[in-house]
Every structure is written in structure tokens, then in C-alpha cells.
Length: 125
Image (cartoon, rainbow, N blue to C red; front, side, top):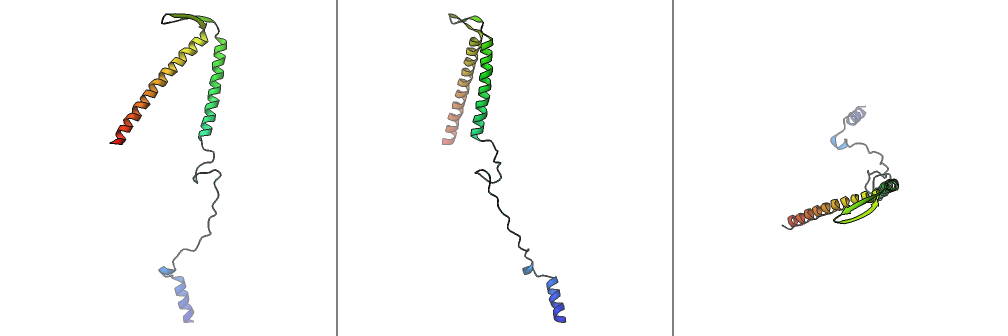
């Protein structure tokens, strides 16, 4: 009977070699719904979705612009560097807006070109 009590004593106080945690059941991995790293949402924004949103916004702006042109058809006299002419008010305003966009695009492009040139000079050193 002493033998069994010694066995119980050993079983109740495990040694460090016996203190390994019990094995756990393997966790089943689920395949992601979309290609890419695990943890990224399959409904995240992509270039295609950004392009689609851009097309929708552009179409809405175009429809609003068309309504503006159709409602402002009265003729106005335009003078520019000695050239004069009659155009509809909407066309004159549209031309002024396009000229403003072009000036902004030119200024922005020059700034981007300047920054890229400066960056190229820094990376060469």
C-alpha cells in the first residue's frame, strides 16, 4: 500500500519535465474571401472602386454643367485683347472656368516637377 501512496504523491506533484501544457486542438484556418494578406477586408477600396466613384462624380458634375448651360443662353459681348464677340453667358463662364483650371494645373505641375528634381538631387548625393 505504501507503493500506491508514493505513486499518488508523485502524480499529485509533477516534476518540471512533466509540466508541459496539454496539447490543444488545432485551429482550422479559413481561406480569405479575397486575394491578399489575411486580416484585410474583402470590401476595402481599390483602384477600380475609386475610378468608379470618379466616373459617377464626373457624370453628376457634367449633368449640372449641362443644366447650367441650357438655362443661361442669353448672349453677352466678350472682349479680350482687342478681340470682341458675342457668346452665351454659360459658354463665357465655362471658358473662364477652364482657363482657371488650366492655370492651376500648370502651377501644380511645375511645383511637382520642382520637387521631383530636388528629390533626384538629394538621392544622388
